[in-house]
Image (cartoon, rainbow, N blue to C red; front, side, top):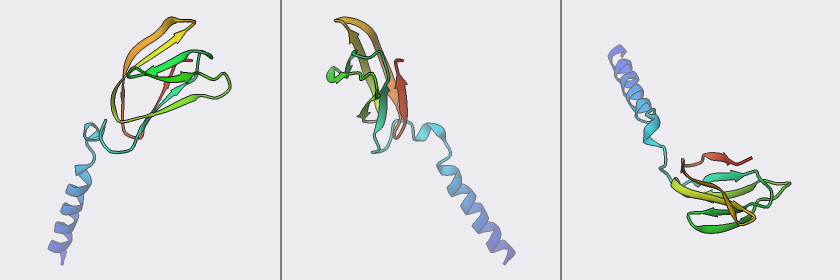
Length: 98
């Protein structure tokens, strides 16, 4: 009985350790990541070259994206104010701007 209990405990520890590697889940999975734009109000947002409207002064602009790398741009009055790449994990949220 004790031997069987040790085997079960060892198997459980091995299975539990399979998902503990933090690198194994970054950027993977079907769940979208989220980009939160909080300012400046009126700035135009582009993600991966696609326009996503203007940042609202009262509510954050939230854009769902697939996990992985994304190129984010913001312009205000026709001038670039942000041009950067971000790595978005599945289910994660990134605050951009402010």
